[in-house]
Amino acid sequence: MTQAAELEVMAILNKANLIVDQLKERSPEVVRLMRQLQEVINDYERDICRNKLRAQYEAALHQEGISPELACAFSPILAYNTVRDIKLVFVKRGESSAHTSVEFL
Image (cartoon, rainbow, N blue to C red; front, side, top):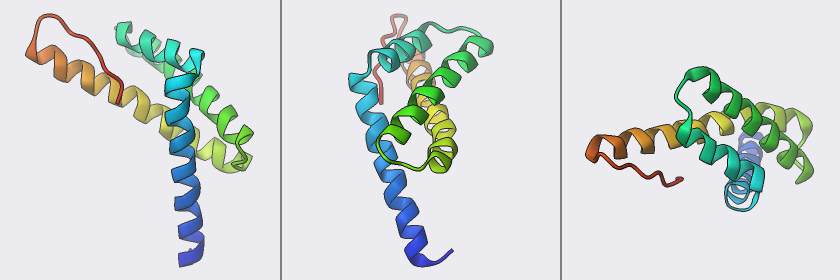
């Protein structure tokens, strides 16, 4: 991959991250899914939420002008990171007190 192509992919990935950050704050469906993840106990339910987030992210990326191929490639990674971040904050806070509240990263 040329340096120019690498820079282009990095710029698109940065744009994708910004789009997802906006969805986390403004999309009622994404916010609902993130809140649901706070309550999910088993891996199956977590996977369902991750897949729904992936679909939301992929649609938004495509709508904002990211090619379908890259939207399809980036959305599972972005959804995985969202779930992981919520899980990490939940576990970290859960270790320090009996009452846990989750903040989204």
